[in-house]
Picture 1 (tube, rainbow, N blue to C red):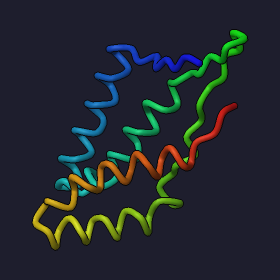
Picture 2: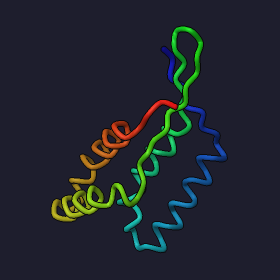
Picture 3: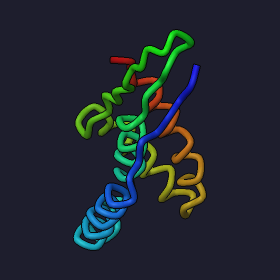
Picture 4: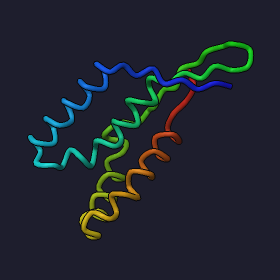
Length: 104
């Protein structure tokens, strides 16, 4: 089995610029949503090739409304721990995103 993420430099740059703009507009609050869309960005561009050469696309089904409670809880944890919780938050977001992904 082989896993390949097809990320172009231009795609990454546009994604970063959009999230930088959103971060400035929302005074940093967008950074609590960013990890979900970062994980989704990478996972949706990932393919898995099995031993028989069949290629399948990963599809991350994380969206804002489905993750809202998760975001609020981790935002509170991050604020109460003065940012230390955000480090753990990033790992939990990846686990959450992987658990909400499927092969298409």
